[in-house]
Image (cartoon, rainbow, N blue to C red; front, side, top):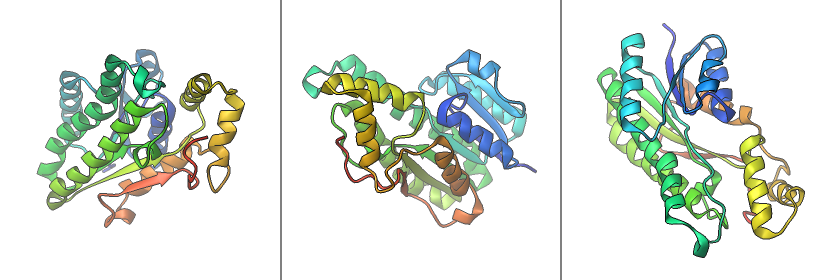
Length: 251
């Protein structure tokens, strides 16, 4: 029987690339997303629910629907996230701070909480959290996002300890700058905050890596597939960067 994967924020961006990759590898794929239009236009073979990953009642409903349809869950990709505000710490609005942590950190916790209730009785499972290289070091003007992504790594390590005895592994993927609409918005906001051109900021991101280029969403999806597979059966509690080796974090 095909393995079963749930991907939060899986109807667009990196999440959709993950969904397509898992489907191509023979998984049954279920995604959640807040974008009803994107959920309605998912590719054939991918199921979806309109849900906010940071809304517990919505996640309870999704997992109940998934349990009824599939009977269980093998892999969770807790992928939901937003870029949050770009501002100096003295200008940071508390409301913006709370919203960023709610989506990025609360959403990851709720996905893990309710996925664990399906995985523990089966005595197996894999949880993959989308963190960021911003969860490995500080990034200027991105305090809420950085705090949330550090929190995701701490959450993952704790989950790996708690659920390991039940045969459940947990790891985090830490993308660097990934080509796509989100990094375009981040670069535009950072350029405005620093008084630079977007092209200069983008070049700074690329030149700050050993490989001198940004990642692609498929690079993230390929690591997710590996971490979900039995080839990584002894890998748990790890935060793995997909970033071309970033060494300059302030472009």
